[in-house]
Structure formats: structure tokens, C-alpha cells
Length: 124
Image: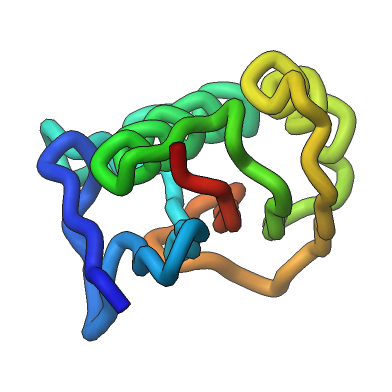
């Protein structure tokens, strides 16, 4: 196992790695919409927060030698399933390869986020 760290994504806010590389796979931790430059959630709507989550995931994947185009599975957590359609619009722009996905509503997310996404991706 090789831990991954990117300065272009928010630092872990607990005892975990941003991602782990195991063989040819990258397993990311869930990313919430923290702006790595400010350490805060700047966007207030689901689409803005989803864009930030995708930027964070992209940075972590790049540090692991992968990218959004190599994602094979996503797990998505929404604070409110009423945001599903708007989330999908932004999600579809980034994950054009249509990876396998689970999407669930949760009672709450860290720092009051509206969305969190984790991925499994191939390297190279």
C-alpha cells in the first residue's frame, strides 16, 4: 500500500490518507467540497460543491498517477436526494466514461457539506 498526498486537495481532516495505491488501483478517501486554498467550503449550492469535490478528486488522482477518465467506480453521498438531478448534471460533465456508481442520501456530512464522493480508479 502506498499512501497518496496532494497539496492541491484538502489535507485529510482525520487519521487517513487522501488515497491509497494498491497495485494498479487507486482508492480515494471521500472528498468534500473544501477549497484547498482556504480550508473552507466556499460554494453554497450542490452544483458548486460538486465541482469542488471533482477538482479535489482530480488532484488526488493526478498525484496517484491516474485521472477522472480512469475511474471505474464512484460512491456518492448526498445530504438531500432532492439535489440528485442537479448533482447529476455536474457529475456527468466530469465522469464522461460513466463509471459504476452508488449514490445514497445521508443524514449529515463533515463540515455541513452537501456532497461527498469517493472513487476507485485504474492507474496508467
